[in-house]
Length: 488
Ligand SMILES: [Zn+2]
Image: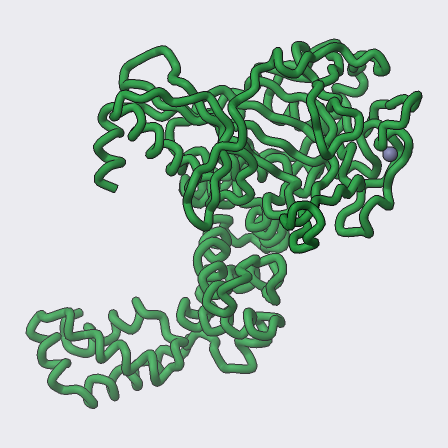
């Protein structure tokens, strides 16, 4: 921490992200093979994705539609005509020895998501999957590698940001916003652990106040949000130490090992000319028609950024709450369902119960799975419960007990209230009698309250709450105690 604070006065981090998103089309990018996960290896292959001589690729129209949706959601300009290039390299996991990607004319450019500008969005194909097998002893005793071509040719959208991020935590938050946005469009699973969302980070430092960018290193394939943040942090520390020692930062590609926290070089960074890009002669340019573009535009759902605006302006939620519900796709969907089921209950009250009590009690009940959608509490039930609290049919304390029952066994809050006798005490005579007993049972506390020590009222309120099983309204109890003690 102390070293970090030290260098942060001298250097400013500059961070850009490169994100790969596997599209959930039915078939691969350039052939008719089905996309498959977790199946027997090499089941879904054909002459095209195995690069047999003479086979010809055909662009997957659905992948283009999905990519257009992503690009439009990121507010990009769509190129009227973009082209595919061959990116030549030795790829052990790609028999063509080139990847079909896009180069100087990508599908889309100049977008924005939140505070970060999008440099480009393009389409390409994924490589096959290398499976490293150890202990076979055949290759110099070091194991061997197998190739599963099922993944080879999966459609990928690559999103490259401008280097607009200056902090590892902000980078993590922004990637979460991007993930929610793409998840909401419904064109990918965007699961980092399973590899359908992958993120590389370009990281550099420059002296505070300088305009020119420093030399950057690229952190490859961080497979969780937490590792992304930790990896960037580690790299910033490493670069700051080099610069402090007046050494050069090399342009290179690094791997971050989250277990050891170490960074190891994979290769010195390649430059574009290393790949001998040239236009793919077997594919026609991508020229989306007006009809395709308007269809893509119209099929976009409400996206996190505009959902947040609506929550602030129309539902009058607090800033933090609006952001949480808009940027967390699962929680947001749950909230929307509860809103739809609510019968005149104020949205803010429902939002409070979703983001506050519900999330908290789910966490308490089972720490590993706090997703409301898969819980026993239906959005309908939660909306009902919030409504009962708002109409003061039950106290907040009683509502918490109902929620605990809902979390444990589900059901209908109205029935639970009846069954457990949790309805608000509306007979004030009954409540007054209990208040009288409370004052009699603890004359010392009563005397102190009478003398003006309001902190002493706690045990008296507690007595009433115990006697009423939390059904009484706390404010009303306090009022009656004060009245009873002549404090009006
Ligand atoms: Zn194929």
